[in-house]
Image 1 (tube, rainbow, N blue to C red):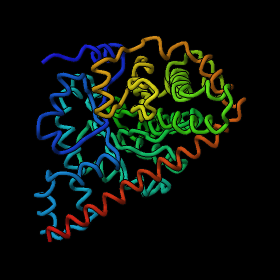
Image 2: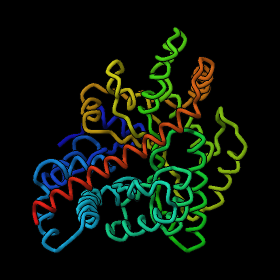
Image 3: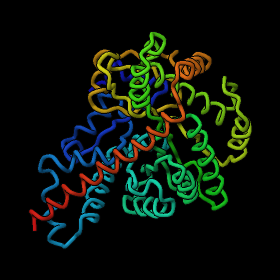
Length: 383
């Protein structure tokens, strides 16, 4: 087998290609392993919507659900068993890549119950539980970047557990995530954990930003407003990369808020093999058909980043995508100008990011509730 040249070029530019999908059929058919050989895939992310789709369609889970029903397992126990079994199996598929890359790639993510998004203590409890159940070093526990999630991120990292921080929409919140990461690594160092084995990614959502802001630009209706459509998501992600550089490389960026230099000094002072928390571009499936279907992949290329793609987006890039290696670095001033223009035409960016976070949590909660209902029906049928 040979790697697709378009995705191989993306990987060579420093972008780790992760698949935003997982199912038992994908694992058992060998398709997941094949993607590592043909599509440069080096990791997998999951979320409640993905598990809801996997468990609600087909018969791949029927035998296990029947066995669990016979043992008297309730809905929560069934979901936990089924999902952690899939994630563990996927971790095993990616174990060779994990070893080859020194733990940078070969990662598989599983999310805490989204109903805990505003409960710090229970998020920590479940994150530790999931880590122990899956029992694989290449696991990432997904924790949402809510205000209550930030201290949970610190506490989970302090336990030596690798974390995928999800549902990040604003650069301001991302800076809070970086601070939570650094605090967690500092505590892990004090506890004697091997810092080189603790990894983290910060999942910055892209297309949803354009969807919400474009809707508001259409409502404003002026030519100046409409000219800004489709620009916010990329600008936001590019500014996030500036924040990443400031925090972990100490490089000068267009943003010079208080504390950026301190973050870089803080990271370098930790030592002990501490890893950088890589930016991950999530929500990269294009929702507006007027935009190129590879927009949030081709135009978000920079070293030490991750792009997690739904299968449809990955196939599109494999077919006709070309990575623009100049699409992020050096675009800080341009991106700041986009945000200034958005505010000038009347976009309340703070409100946009609040709405997106609330909607993100609500959508994952709804998917989880649908998963609960579907699993309950399956257990009832098997009983």
